[in-house]
Length: 337
Image (cartoon, rainbow, N blue to C red; front, top):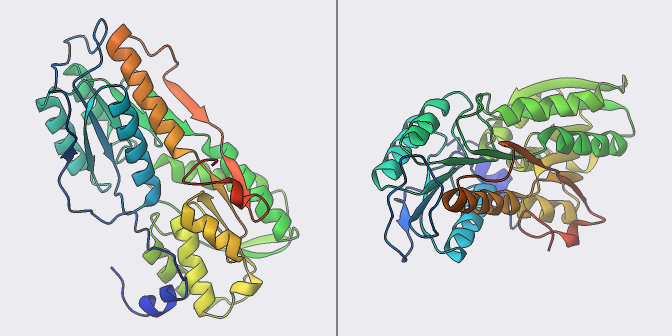
């Protein structure tokens, strides 16, 4: 991780965790007590009953969004009578493949997956499906249909447009701004960036002075923002593709003594971002309901195991909600209280 100058600046964000999206927990998959794993049927579901293993695989739990996904999926699966294993692929496609292979070897009844790449994940998902282990994707889509049983994602375009409209209003429709973009391999990054642009481009007095990828990471966002500030202090706004990058920008702006003059908007609705909004350090975020999507994936896996069908279309989206200082108290961990 980059250390130069970061520790001092990040200490200014009292009560804010680093949320390093790419950090590894270093822990092996944990299985909860419960029924023994039951063999997946050769056809991948239908005519079965609750019981057996549901494998839950997400990016690093250092990011509270992914932890909320995993916790919610685990709780719902156990409520429905399944054993669970929870693991992180840390956005490493090779590690993801190993974890999917392990789930197949353990004869999992289903996999709930927040994947490690829209293209890199197609092969492993297909392998699981062909082995009779249905896969239910959350948060991130893959660039193929008919491979996973469900792709349940937040309406990233709608959420980005909500965030961008709030940003425009807070900027009073003019000024110089910076955009921090997520990981290029994640389709959410480009969808959110386009959603921002669809709104902001309608206001000619808003000028994009820098656009940098910080790969969803707070430390990297701090460093990128620090460099941007050194080159151009005439900045009135920052809009970021997720809250971890937004909080990194907040830290850099605060260290430079500029935060009180800059509007910062993020995306995700993380508890730390909501705390920053309440404190006046951020203006807004678009909250995506991580818990709801994860629970829905498990419920659809349960339906498929029992009936051979989810009863839903493969591609499903859930609308985001805008969080501002006015309504921040209404929200908890990636959802309404």
